[in-house]
Length: 153
Image (cartoon, rainbow, N blue to C red):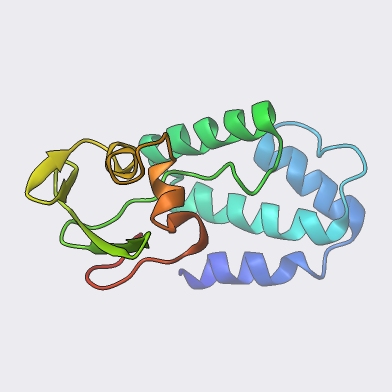
């Protein structure tokens, strides 16, 4: 980080509320949200200073964040609403169901189970259980139970 940028950010905590509001107006070209606390203004302003100096988010990242925001608006801030998890090819998912072990390997184009290819974990969960299941829930991906092999992002 440039020394000048680092100094600007360090000075934010020493500015008065009015100075922060004025800086907000200058950097965002609009007034700060009504009633925003000083403790929230400082990190927003620091980010904006860095964004102006080094560039903002990539368009793909902005698009993903907008999609997540729309889902949160539609369904509320429930822990069930999350961005899709990416699992690296080569990862092996294990699940015991009714006394039998089941192993699924993540591939570049989907999943492999008992030598056959599947487009989703839900298809595999349905084959194993005979009922409609959420594949990620069945394989424990909703509560961080990934096992053996690669990692997820």
